[in-house]
Amino acid sequence: MRFFIIDDDQVVRSILSEIIEDFDLGEVVGEAENGSTIDCNLLSYKKVDILIIDLLMPIKDGLNTVKDLGSDFKGKIIMISQVENKEMIGNAYALGVEYYITKPINRLEFIGITQKVVAHMKLQKSIDDIKETLSVLGTGKQLTKTLSTSSEKNILTAGQFLLTELGLISESGSKDILNILEYLFELEKDTPLGQEFPSLKNIFINIATKKNSVSGNKDDIKKEMKASEQRIRRAIFQSLNHLASLGLTDYSNHKFEEYASKYFHFAEVRKKMMELANDDLCMSPTRINIKKFIKTLYIEAKKQVFSNDIY
Image (cartoon, rainbow, N blue to C red):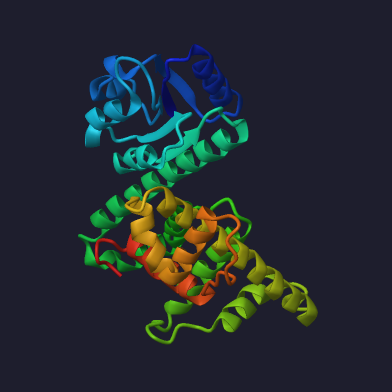
């Protein structure tokens, strides 16, 4: 990935460049101390994938720079600032900023967020390639079998993309969820799921059995079922927390609007938002519906793969 850093503090630019290079996140291809000399032509010429920009700068600040770039800049934007004003942060997200990081820069936070953005971009490119391939293959009806094979391989890519969007790709339970997507896809080859979506118990039994196929020990299978469910539950809670945080910062955030009510009961999302806004608030425990989450994820992953109406 190719980075461009805009910050009026030379020390900050040096620190960020060092982190990017030391942790093999990519290559820094340019720097600037404010946005007055930056436009889409320059970023395009330097083939910039990720723009890191400060909010408050002299001459031309971060918000105005991002606003002027508009939709012409096809890369991702990470904004950094000491400002924690929710309205200004909301304005940044409304302009298309992917993540907002507060100063002073926390090295681990910056690395984690940047890795997520990089992973997101790679997955998006992979999905775009899939769509292009499917579009080409779709012109020949005799290639249906080839298309099916390609789709089977890429249901996981679509799942990874969505898990990244939902903020849980780095969670240990994400691997269990991807295994479930693969199992459901295989299952639907013989019988369309429709309204007869498998029970969670059957899903967990099949996944655990497959993992312990060598030993076949019932006790091991039960232990794996319980462990898998716990990992998945923790991962889904993390996703709820992630989306609620986005909504609390900016209610119009596109990820919050698109995913929150789709994957969770919105009453629980609101409850989590209230908990985050009031640390000392005593509320009933937040509840999640694992089956709703997995079913929605599977449906959305199939849409990603078969967005050209070929299935």
